[in-house]
Each structure stands twice: as C-alpha cells, then as structure tokens.
Length: 143
Image (cartoon, rainbow, N blue to C red):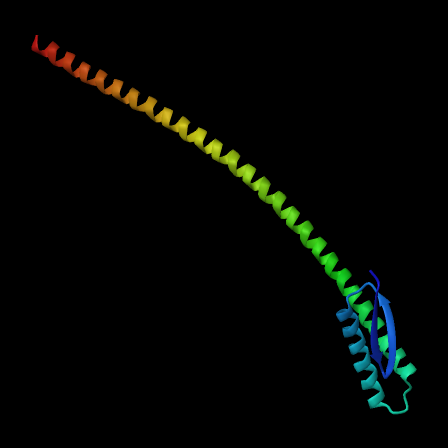
C-alpha cells in the first residue's frame, strides 16, 4: 500500500509517496536534512542545491563502496562454503577409510586369536606326546 509521508529537508516541505514505513522515510529525511545543514553551516556561500548534490555524491560513493564490499563478502562466503564442502568430503572419506581399517583390524585380531589357539593346541599335544614318550621310556626301563 502506498503511503504519503510528509518530511522537511533543508527548510523545504516534501510529500513522498512510498510503500516503505513512515518511520523509515522520516529517518532518511532526518539524515539528509542533517547532512545538508552541516554542509550549509560549514560554507555560507553554498546553495541548498549544491549541498544536495554533494550529499548525493557522498551517498552514491558510500553505496558503491558498500555494494563492492558486499560482493566481496559474498565471494568470500562462497569460498568458505566451497572449503567447507571440501572439508566435509575429506571427513567423509577419512571416516570411510577409518571404518575399513577398523574392519581389517578386527579381522586380523580374529585371525591372530585363531592362530594363537591353534598354536596352544599344538603345544598341548607336543607336551602330551613328550610326557607319553617319557612315560614309555620309564616303562621300558622298568621292564
């Protein structure tokens, strides 16, 4: 909805048709009035029109610099997003590799346990055979 906002800038009343809130337009008008008044007070030979042109130039300069700064920030944010995506991919890859290594380690631990059990059974059979051999040798001597 279009609002008609009445403002006073450098002693001249204006009616502005806008869809922006009245408080916002009033704050813009107040800032412009303050800036023009400051220029006029600093230079008594300056006309309101020239002061308005200087303010417009200053505002345009600020706008362009802030637009450039915003573009730079957008570019940096895109770089950060790309870096974050690369880091996420690297993290996912590392997690997958970690999982593979965990499985391999578990399989190797299981294999080692089987080999230890097999070796223990061999040693047990060897001891039994040695004991049996000793027992047979003693039995032969006793005869």
